[in-house]
Image (cartoon, rainbow over all chains, first blue to last red; front, top):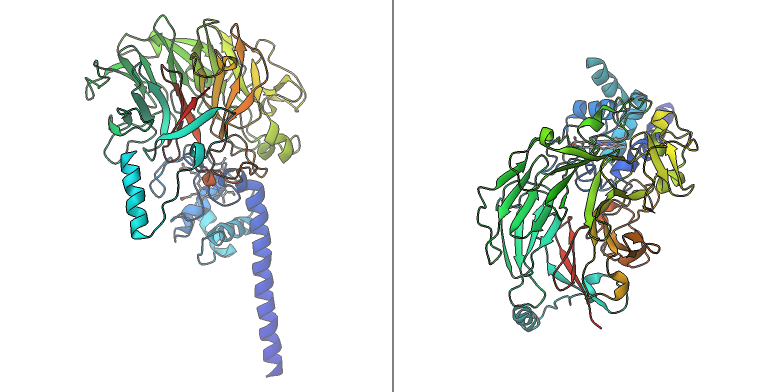
Length: 130
Length: 418
């Protein structure tokens, strides 16, 4: 009983630690690689850089698309929630799978966004597929 | 006005309070100037133009729900508010210009010409003359600004579809292309005949090159030459963190104004202008280190403004309504920056710089501020929080200055009373 509790506690702490770690990495990646365009509030720049806060795709289920955008950049000028953005998004060839998962979780759960977590394994699998 | 009064009376009767119109439409202006809202919520109003009799035309970035992108605004009862608002033209764009009874408007790849009747109503809304077509439009810097010289030549900005002409745009480590292949068909101002129809690149002339993206341009009738304002490059710190700090990126490069004559080169992408060192510096994509000078053949700017503020319109003031200091001077509408992040943003105002004999005769100053809707001493932290972003400028025959906003589509009218 005691042992089980300890294991449970350890597990809990471990998970929380991993999540916190993920949060710190995500925020760091966002601040250094994304903030300049998508801004501190995730609001983007009208007509130029798409907003991430409140964006349907960002909290949506198409994780493969999001991973691809972050790794390879984005310059499609398709309507995103009804608006067009003219800038070209920088690719991030140097980001690790851990960093991509972390920044994805960061943008999916910052500002007003709330969405299920993306795991490192998921990102790994999606990047291999390409 | 009557309607407003009725609304207020009606509102107070029902027991809810109506927010009073802000003094000067929320703008902060020099003493003696007044501002009011000429129109509101007309859509993303880019450039504006006004006829001799005071009818305004605004070009929308996107057509509105009625499929109109050229909006006609008339203040028939002369109370300073446009009450007669109509429109046409189902294409987004930026440029609009009036010369006599010709109204020019641009999409991102063409320039059209409409005829106005004696009441400034459009005669050929659905069948304009196509003056220029087939201009390069590749998402970035795609908008086309236009102005005419007194001889009737039309000048069109064709922005570079790139930040710094890298092999791969906005990609860390990607080199600048030598020579930059974009410059043969973009990254400059082209000159065409203002009356000939169906012109393409082969009918025009590259008037000035080495201009990344010019959105503000105006002909100065004193110097009899073209002046342009360039949007300088972005992201020096993102791609070259070893050379530029966030603080340096926020101040580099300057937003520049040039007087351009035929054949001039302003240096993009090989150099940028550093307003602190007051030098043309080799771009890091071309081997620069933040200090190495370059661009021996490139023009020096006539004015350099702080970085990233995004000059959207340039207008030389010809009227007599404003005090003498403003006569022949330049107004510049600054959209407001985004690439100063993580530092606070700048711009979101209309600046003024006095001119004498076709040359600046003093320092630039902020003329109209407060478009963001934030308290006077608060800087915009995130661009989407700015209530209005100055874009177009126009002067009416009686010397009032109009400023358009391309966020929700307000038009501010600024007047002076002795």
